[in-house]
Length: 318
Image 1 (cartoon, rainbow, N blue to C red):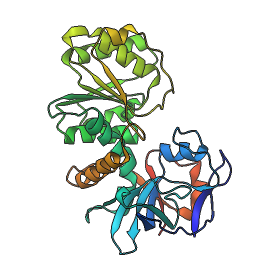
Image 2 (image 1 turned 135 degrees about the horizontal axis):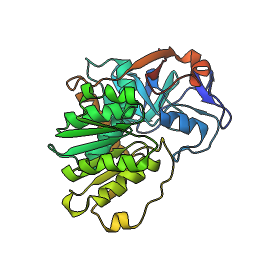
Image 3 (image 1 turned 90 degrees about the vertical axis):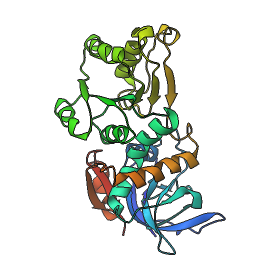
């Protein structure tokens, strides 16, 4: 079968031939129609993601949309290694597939699943968001952050605060449901000052896609808000800005901040699949917006280095 294959660590995937998969016990074969390129897919392909095995060669892609042998249309996640989603066929465990609503097209389903799940799982599985609470999305101008705003509102958040570096992109977030936008500049003190009033009013959940300096300032500002502020559930999802932070120990001792992560490993696979199922069912009634562009899988080598996260690149397989 044809597939996008990583032959050498750190090299761009190539379009070529890979052994046709045979389902094992408890597995189903999927005839893939669409698979999206995400930050996780990129980092796993390069071998830098914490979940990368390092074994070569392998087919890239962790999720996608396709049809079972009986014609059922499904979204699937985490094919059995060394298989991936960017191929004509793949196999996964039956429990790692979810049915797609008829009104949701293949490309949108493939594009929205990973970034949407990151927000859905962070708020539902980790933060246990309740209707009427306030959510701050740190790094809200990217694809995942924009979806996090929409999903927070769909889940009943009373107020959503969005941060980001791109001023023009921040301005566009109000129509997605952001009630307050805060720019992330080079001046950390100015950011902390801007956050102070928001924390004083009460921020229940922080969904962080950036880590690095802005996450440090968020945690410190929340701690300084002191006893007058509500306890904060800080959920770390991504590290776009930096892989590490420096945090004063007093920030945790003097506050009721709960630090937690959300992703593969911190949430059981069956719960991640449940989050995706819930997301798929909510996408059309929630009118979730995501920009996409489609490219044939045959062009994976040319498109790989040029594709960004906005709009979301979706490789069409069939």
